[in-house]
Picture 1 (spheres, rainbow, N blue to C red):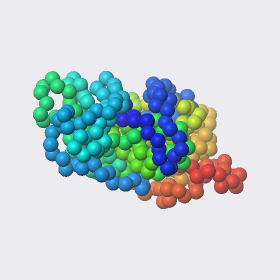
Picture 2 (picture 1 turned 90 degrees about the vertical axis):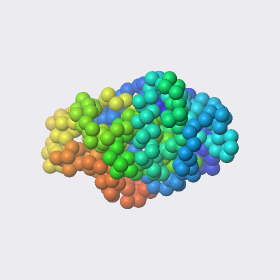
Picture 3 (picture 1 turned 120 degrees about the vertical axis):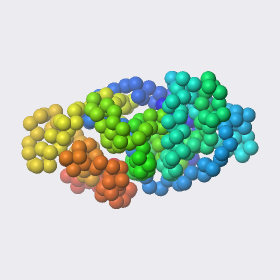
Length: 343
């Protein structure tokens, strides 16, 4: 929904070129895999380099200062373009909001003015103060080559899922530390530079105070919890993309009370009488590592079920003790096969 610039080569770490049309229909389809009956969402850490974007610029956006290179994408809100600053030659992304979507632009600008973190896209400047009433809102942002939606199918990305998830959680933790919630975490709002695996959260048009409650997945919950459940859905997206290509969809979930009953039963060593949940748990064990499954269950549980209620808590889980730690899924453990290092 935001930045998708996949025309460049990944550099020395990748030998492939992205197909700019291969993933265009991602968000319009439903996941058919039972795993994503769970929820709706977004998540990542570790070795991302600090951005070189100069965030101390105070000058208002002026169209004549930039050269438009090409359009990256568009939607009902407006469009995103790749631009070059004429004076410095620096490459940026220009997000243009239609005047009718001014409220979302203002939310994004206010949020980005408060946020400063290596895993959050940086705002360079905007025209929010100088624009006339009916003019579009322009926001100049840090540029990354593509979003997670566009590249997850590539091996280099899939081999770094744990690192990516860690960086997402680091970004979410910073957002929450400012008493804000993103409220729209999803693959298209996670930008990535495959050359160095640097990950940044973008698109803050729905951002608001974290304690504000709204209806999410049919339930009333605050923004912090919404973001955590979105991270859960991102984990599921990482694990089950191969069986459901093009299938990220918020609407496919089972009720939270069923999930909590399911977790409580397993924790107490009981038998899952619901065959559907039993099959789901077996598939989870087969796909997740032991630590990965533990993290997933703590994120999805409610407060009363010993949940991780914050991103900072989640980052303390043993799953992240070593980003490259060998932690294979159940089937590989039982077969005594070291297998692939999976999330």
